[in-house]
Image (cartoon, rainbow over all chains, first blue to last red; front, side, top):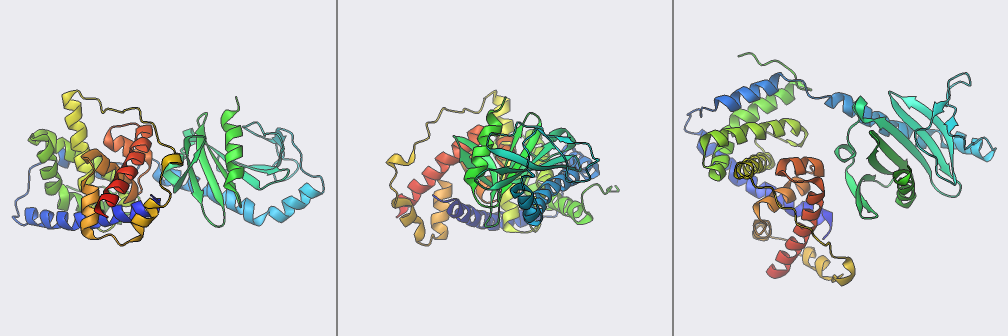
Length: 211
Length: 180
């Protein structure tokens, strides 16, 4: 059964059950007697005083990573493709950043698989952004966000899931782009491309299996 | 008592406070139904609101039916977890062989869901699920909680959530077929 049908059933059930519960709630509250729950009251007061655990920071990092993927993918492709066609792409593990030539080379934290070349690498708010090109397929933007710096877990930010070799992987699938996200070695990796989830799946396997 | 602003927005804090005021009694009653112990029921309410706090993004209007169902699902899960913990029960996680699509009827499922489901159908098929399965199903498909959060709320592993969801889909398909 398709997920959208399951959502339809679950949503209707929540609506029906919720209406019944609201009536029950209002009947209970109508007597005007306040139930004594001193420990629960104290706990809630603690919550009302406590700062949310890095939620805003984690959201900022998530959207930074996604914006970086999309900005690189949608705004720079022509310039980078021209550089590639002119032989400007190189496969060394340390790629120069897209900023000035005097900048320190940014190390690539993963082994670039065979048949891929790194077109650019940059750091954005602690998130590494790497634009890599396959010799005969979709170009891919890879972001690597350290979890210790508050990166959101993949399942928290990706709306979809796909199955790859029996594993459920967090994903985003839209008409304009495809994304996969997974954790490895304390970092959150996000892969995005324009066209083909298969390209991301193949890269996912390479990155997952590298030692 | 002065409430100190620590939420992302003032409205979020006010919504949380309003949820607690309006739902604490209902949630206590639901927890007491399961636990039969006032102190444990209060603990369940307390635990439930910690979970609500973590999932404020899933809360719509304070008086929305979906919000009511969400909060009660959460407190029932909290109560069930406390109940299992008190009994020393580990939640069983059977090995499940996920059937491949090879033996499935490729036409049956789509035919079943093409017709309009009545409210009675919806109540019946979801009601046929056991308590834990119903909670997992609703948290996943009505509220789009990630597997990790569902696992934490139900006191099971993330992997088992995935397995359970597969079984739940099969169960619902079977229930729809029976009704048809």
